[in-house]
Length: 216
Image 1 (cartoon, rainbow, N blue to C red):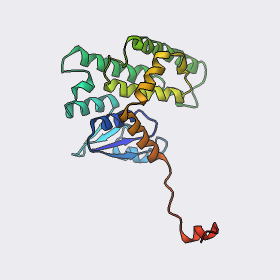
Image 2 (cartoon, rainbow, N blue to C red; image 1 turned 120 degrees about the horizontal axis):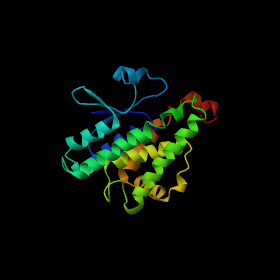
Image 3 (spheres, rainbow, N blue to C red; image 1 turned 180 degrees about the vertical axis):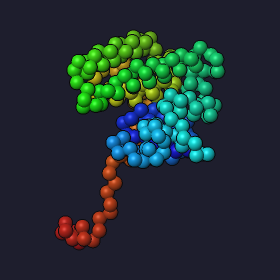
Image 4 (cartoon, one colour; image 1 turned 90 degrees about the horizontal axis):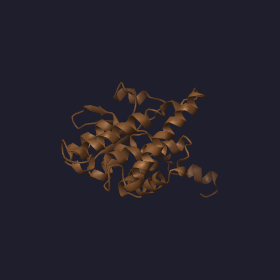
């Protein structure tokens, strides 16, 4: 299978899960500005996209996260067994992060988003952050003491909020949560791989280059 992702986007959540699962996969980085390649893969033209071994393409982060967990029989990462309240609490958080955080702040990326809409979106999102902060008052992760795919989705969105200049320092539980998540091996590996892939690769120096530098 192949993960289609863009650096800094919510596709990182799937990248983290793939690392956590420890299964073989390929990656392809795409641009969100020039969507030519994205449109070749899917008319949705946004990430994440998962190209399955049979060629089918799956989209939507929350769907891909659940699919991979069930496919790899890692029900612990999806909260619990089918039909359990623990599983649906995990899905509840997935939906919350997707609709109330990720999609809600989407307009803030546009240069056309100006006051009063910008202020309204900031205030609404801060209320959601207060809710998350309160929920983390007595637990290490969203649903308890074990990491789930809801956490993998949230941590990516929290970093997106930091990029949008949200002041997360006033939420002490969230800041502690970010530290815990960022220290997880799967998070470190996925973020490191995306950073390395995004770094421009330098071509080997030629004899002409060395001569111009006075080194030949």
